[in-house]
Amino acid sequence: MPNIKIPTPLRPYTDNQSQVSVTGETVGEVLNALVNQYPDLRTHLFNGDELRNFVNIFLGDEDTRFMDGLNTDVEPDDQLRIVPTIAGG
Image (cartoon, rainbow, N blue to C red):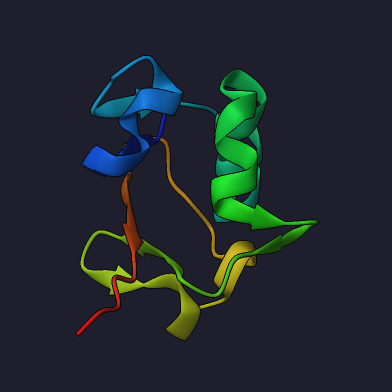
């Protein structure tokens, strides 16, 4: 099963787990499985059916926005990371 690394600010919505294993064959399926398992996480990742602009998903070291986005294929042993964009000044 693919694993998703959860950033610290989102861990309260995953029972404080730093990593979650979920099923799916694409990034979108994996993220949907994640928010089905942890529904409170949905509003932090999605705006309706679209991934929020400030949420970046990495497959290994590759930003999936520069691949096929939510349609990027995922292998069972892949490691994904949720990387929220942080702004400030």
